[in-house]
Image 1 (tube, rainbow, N blue to C red):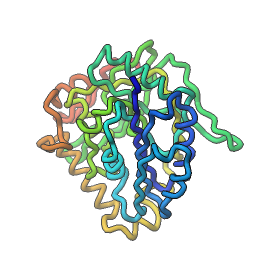
Image 2 (spheres, helix red, strand yellow; image 1 turned 90 degrees about the vertical axis):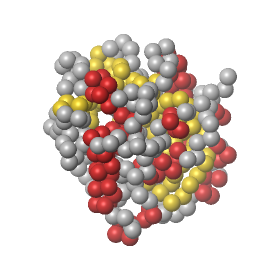
Image 3 (tube, rainbow, N blue to C red; image 1 turned 60 degrees about the vertical axis):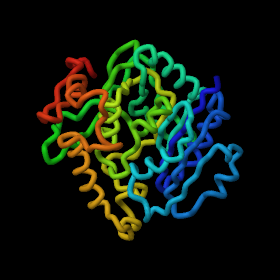
Image 4 (tube, helix red, strand yellow; image 1 turned 120 degrees about the vertical axis):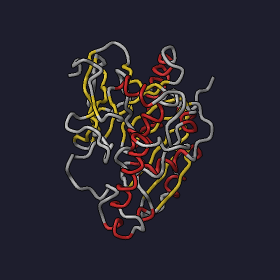
Amino acid sequence: MKETIFVSIASYLDPMLFFTLNDAVAKARHPERLSFAVVDQSVEDQREAIGGLPFAQQVRYVHVHPQDTLGVCWARATAFSLYDGEDYILQIDSHMLFEEDWDQKLLAQHAKLRLRSAKPIVSTYPYRFDFVDGVPQPMKNEGRTALVLRPHPEKNPTQEDAVLRFMARHLFTDEPVLGCHVSAGFLFAGGSFVEEVPYDPYLYFHGEEQSLAVRAFTRGWDIFHPLLIPVYHLYKSEGTAYQTHHWHGENEARRAFRSSYLLERARKRLNRLLMGDGLPGAYGLGSVRTLKQYSEMSGIDYANQRISDPFGGKLC
């Protein structure tokens, strides 16, 4: 059986886009089974350069000028619309480094998780890589811990603002850990995820992963944090303004919808999903499990605006 992978990439003014595409293909055991959905939010249309890639026929490319975009969730929803029935989906950012045979490693992890769940999702925050003298250097992990995603203790959800900040904490384990949160920059699942948990284009940035996690859980999907992550992420410095942030730069002043409006619209939408009527429709809660069941599993109680630790202080 030829297992195909749909690789969803939303890129915003990112000079690393072609590095990511080329590295993914070069390091895959079966590059011919990959299909890329690229939503390129760049000033210049890069269609010609895409056409010059040796794997161009495997790339579905959409160009949007940065002043016409509505944020990362809108772009990722557009990428989802390019899905064409592939067996699996890998959603990543546009500045990633891959290990050799990354595709086979993800497929093998997913196959093992199918023994624990009918609908497993493999997701966590990837380890970082940096360029040292022009050479990408990944931060290797030893596979003795899983990076478990948990809310920062500094903030509980409130009736006015359900948005939480999440962090990755190590848990010593010998198997993937059942989790309650996803990383939008590294998510691997069966391809039906695209149709069952469609990306909400009305969100902006904050709350994106909360929406995905809760909506997936209530539709019967299970999130697992793996021990080994075969992709690496080029992280920005926290607290630094970048032109590659959607809400910074000259394009912001030209948009019909400013970031302040998009942020407020997204905040209200997330509040409605998690502490309101559940946002009926495709972008709302599912009917397989309840938000109360999510609270019991995760310790994140949106209804009562409390957070507890389901790991009993074992995270380090």
